Amino acid sequence: NAGVTQTPKFQVLKTGQSMTLQCAQDMNHEYMSWYRQDPGMGLRLIHYSVGAGITDQGEVPNGYNVSRSTTEDFPLRLLSAAPSQTSVYFCASRDRLDYEQYFGPGTRLTVT
Amino acid sequence: DQQVKQNSPSLSVQEGRISILNCDYTNSMFDYFLWYKKYPAEGPTFLISISSIKDKNEDGRFTVFLNKSAKHLSLHIVPSQPGDSAVYFCAASGANFGNEKLTFGTGTRLTIIP
Image 1 (cartoon, rainbow over the protein chains, first blue to last red):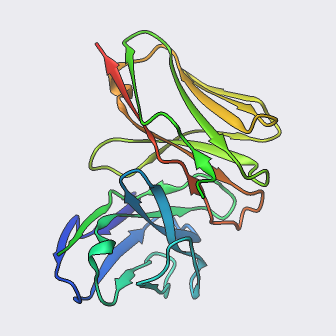
Image 2: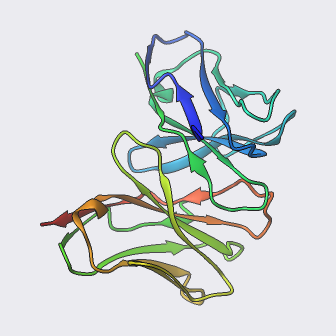
């Protein structure tokens, strides 16, 4: 099992550019989430999904879009990048009946 | 409004001694708590958890204590080892398994001194 994989590991964007952060899991988990980690802020939930075709907003959803067309994949889209979106992004998944989340290795994004 | 607080940004402990990491929460609806460990350039990994129906959960060198009346939990690591040097996050969730709003603290960086 590869677990939760994220691509790319690093990305630099200019303000206004768009991009998609990829996330995939091979554990057949129904629940998937995106978090961002900023210094002194812990991990904050951006969007989550409880199954294919179902998504919802977390604590800091503005500026991000998600979709869930398959159980395995949960991409995060930045439509028009802003310097405030400079952060480390983590994707996570868990089984429907378990609290434990499995995290990917993260994507470090810098917006200039 | 920080609902889960880890007031110590860093902690240094001698190898072999006990490490105690603390976490406070304000939301009385939280009833499941988890600790995650994070090494640099890696994602957080699950360490140990506790339900609000318990006041203690033990797994090898790691023990989590929960004091519901004080809205406080702590993670004890005994004995501390150099490989325990990492950032530790406390997290809390409501009772509903469908609740994805896992709330994290800001983390405590633990350094074990050989």
